[in-house]
Amino acid sequence: MKKTLFSNFLILLVASTLYLSNTVAEDPTQWNLPEDAKARLGKGKITEILYSPDGKFLAVGGGVGVWLYDTTTYQEGNLLTDHTHEVESIAFSPDGRMIASGSVEGLITLWDRRTGPLTILIGHTDIVWSVVFSPDGKTIASDSRDGTTRLWDVITGEEKYTLTKDTKSASMLSFTPDGKTIVSVSWEEKIRLWDAYTGKHKKKFAMHPDCSVTGAGFSSDGKTVAIGSDNGTIYLHDLDTGELKLMLTGHKEHIDQLAFSQDGKTVATASFEDKTIRLWDAHTGEHKKTFTGYTRYVRGLTFSPDGKTLANGSGDGIIRFWDTRTGNEKHTFTGHWEHVVSVAFNPNGDIIASGHSDDIVRLWNADTGQHIKTLNGFRNVVYSMLFSPDGKILVCATNFGVSLLDVHTGEHKKTLTMDIPYSPELSPDGNTFAIGVDDKTISLWDAHTGEHKKTLGGHTDRVGCLAFSPDGKTLASGSDDKTIYLWDVDTDKHKMTLTGHTDWVNCLAFSPDGKTIASSDGNLNILLWDIDTGKTVMMFIGHTDWVQCLAFSPDGKTLACGNRDKSIYLWDTHTGEQKKRFTGHTDWVRSIAFSPAGKTLLSGSGDGSVLIWKINP
Image (cartoon, rainbow, N blue to C red; front, side, top):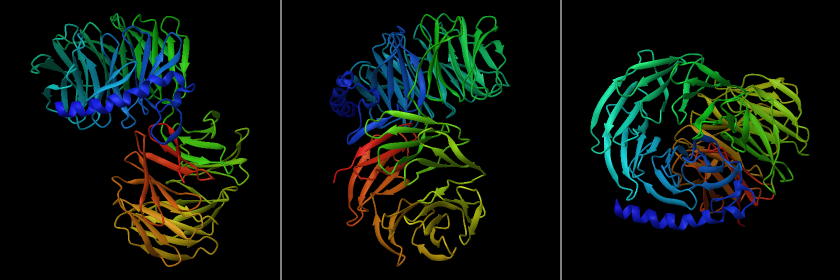
């Protein structure tokens, strides 16, 4: 362990120098960019938020790392990121100088709030749901989906104890004020108390029989825990006896965010379903206030130390600060987005479009990275986008239809409403879209009138991916039956079947000259095919996880592959050699696109950000 910690120290010592120049960059989204990245669009999604003990900072964990906001000036203060892991949980040390962040891959990073990473705690093998410092700041407790709760020495980074549980259910953790006891509330409806010095189990309580746990919050005096349930009720339990003290009712269902004010007099709760935040008197159970106006779920609740402000994150990417006495909104932070599922350049390469899982498309200046416009009005996620040849129209396809938008005004010029079971594919001219249907066929539709044009059948299993040739005359379909069909779009004829994959075909892309097609499958094989002969001309080997998207460079010399391993591979299509591997996202790479000039590559990720990468000749 000591050797590992020393190696981590050397790596993090170098990395920490990146954090000293943050104030130089005018745009905080460009802080601490990954190697080879030219720019970042957006601040990433929000997973957790927390006030510092002195109330001067708000930490926001998420897709890019941990953002620190100054709550006095309402400015970005720092970005703590290691470029590899999405943050799931965060905690401040009692003096506020150190932050612990738990990642989706089981690592816990300790950060100096000002200078960056200090060390990494290695031991968990899955998502770290909860991290918390002991009152004296010398110990960290963490809980993971790997089924363990662990105690760590903050100074040495060494693991002190592993607390043995009889379940792999996630737990929320807290220390009692004297630091002698750790309290855990598990999703399998038990409250457990552990000796913080020996790691021995002290006792456990069963919760209310109608309570299916969805969240938990602890009072600062260590006497009460608030339990959120899937039925919308909040249960307050005495931590000494396990006795049920209060039941708070009013939410519809699924309470997943809870927080106590520092004085223990108020409980804040948020419902996933009714999208409201409520304040309750923690002693009487009286409902005090309701905060509304949310279009998506709440992510994270935290009181300022004086209890006068409640901050929360949301799936709409906005961090809101509420006055707890008046109920008025005091301030907001913006720039955080949900998953990015599609990206595209306009024909001139000066505008970027990004489609997000919050059913919104955002337009950006490709040169400056500045946000230009937000396009709303979609009923679902925009999985596929294409600019018209003149760049004036953006064609957007969702699972509920196709919309044609005026890029300048954002107006929906035409919307075709229909159910589309799988991701639609647009023809290069934007006039036709193809979809795979549950009955193993492919349907082609007129993108302007919504008229069904034709149905193509032949596959023996689900059609999971489609691609049009650059001239729009050929349609390729990849199926779970491990084959690729080539279709003549004008005549409806099945031209050829490409066989050679050993698992379901999940991605397709045509080369710019239309002579070659790239495909990937569930066994991590990426193949290049000659569409005249139907033969495999090349195989790319080296991926460690499924490919999510494929794109050829404009000159056809490079194939880019976006992966579930959060990286982008660049392959030489003539030699088969790997030219480059871009790393920096913290979640799957969902979509990629080359600029028309081929000098940059876009990547959209589940971490809520778009990265623009420099492509060297």
